Length: 173
Image (cartoon, rainbow, N blue to C red; front, side):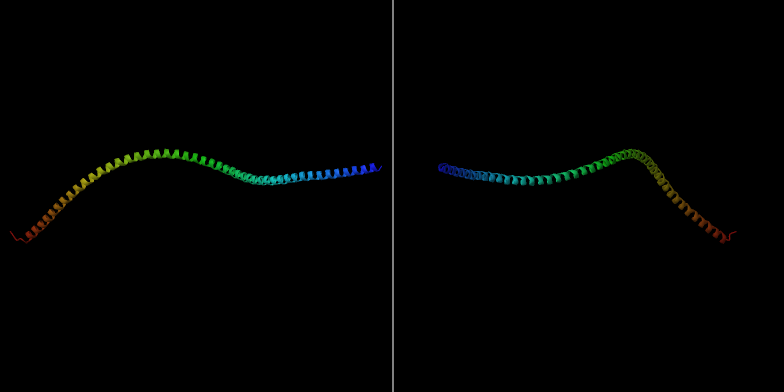
């Protein structure tokens, strides 16, 4: 029985050695796999952090773009209102312009008519000025003749007074 005990011990020793070797092999294998998995995990975490950073920057950019879009929408709405106001103002101004053009044409017609009357009146005025000038000349001539005749009359009166004075002094029969 010693052979069986000896063999059993050897078999047990072999099994223990085999188990220990298998355990060491499995430990090394799992350690290597664990390190690979740990490295991959670290890489995935790094990639996740990179993606997370990119996502945050994209979200910030998206928020900025969204804000700009809202601002542009508000501006577009304001510009639409202003455009409507400008269009209505333009239509009013065009209506006023048409009225003013019609009024201008009417006034130009009246001006032409008035200018015609003015030309006629000026022609009459010039003719009357010529008549006045002629009559003034005749008046001056008449005044000159009147002055001459007045002087003659005064001289005649003086001569007559002198003659009467001489007659009064005269003692003739």
